[in-house]
Length: 566
Image 1 (tube, one colour):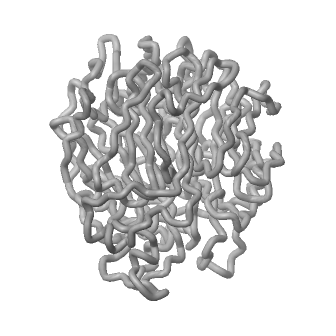
Image 2: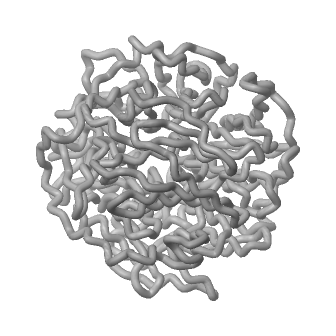
Image 3: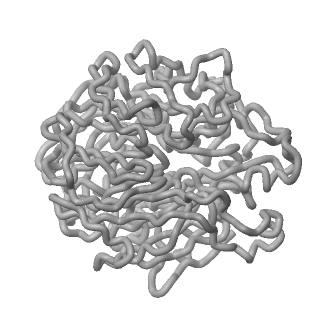
């Protein structure tokens, strides 16, 4: 499936743009100077077993997290942050009675603050005033977002000029979209209508070129900040129309230094808003293969070629499945094209290609929030995403009713059975990675939903902390920070003795989630030679004294050692 996406002079490049003195990568290049074509090849998608991967053990209660979801659907969220600047990561949980912030004590978690917002839907941490402390926005259903300023680790509610009410906010991301030195905010909203399409799903399936615009959606919101207050600029910036948005990403996908916005929609195609660099965006409708009920969007260099790829979770069901409630399975799921996840890469002409089927990572059941990270520290990125444990179709094998897992390899990914790794059979919504005990092994926090719960019914339903039981802890970890807040969308180049690794530091918001902003690099027997940070203003800093097995905070003029990974 290939489409050229050169639109009105814009070339979709999916490029990580680096400017490094003496460097690995030249500005605007899509590959490092020593890079070759990706060695990844198509991988069989059959489910395997691999005792050399990772087992997880659920340990929430014994580590101080006891948070129960409410029946309200799609509010179960996980937001990872180091709110007190002590170098370990804390977590905000939402979807229970009220949002609760848990502080990492070093030996577990302790409830730190409850926010009395019963209709809270989603949240996001950002340093809006560039003082080095991450502030908090909580967007509710049918009211103005609540904003809490972080004063040296203490949150105080403050009016920062956000006047417009949110109705069904699902995803928030922040970036300096207009390049004025202050963070701006994008809020993606879900629809309020009973049905997205007036046409029967069968009609849409039989006429794929029809591609009707879904109805009953809500307007997404764009706020520009000046480090003191926010102003709504949605329409004048070019973000028009009503969407059924669940997920988003804020990252430079065109390689021009301006932060773009990728919007994943449950109904209808996804959209890419290309930043023109003057405070406005060009609206680009993504190819037809993104019209698959997007639930999560992750942007990262997944295959090591120096360019950003886009991984999107969607709905996948077996072709032979039938509805257990009668009628069409497509009408039952309200999904016209349940063909699975997208893995969008850049082709040689600068357009998009979806290679999920080729790499065997499309069949993920009813996908929800995803993480892409190195869970076994072998130097390859793995994929883990939530799913619905109960779905009214048969046959629907058990492997698709629990966490979906693909182990990264030198040539692609191998699908594994999440139920054999300690994951429960649940309807998981939000999820995030976190190394909560600083042992060099990434753990996972999940937010299960009571909606249509048909999982492990002998187990009480609470939020989960899955501790990584892997024995390999050889990793390098660091936060990229600056007291002036310019670390947002900084580019990172890690040079080892065998390869060059590229990462982007961005706000990492997703569907009812904010993933960890800790840069975690599984070393897989490699040794680190140097790390270079390319800041948004074009300046760069190279660190040559970082050692595997340690966590750092990287500032423009120094590397602060946080801890030795135990």
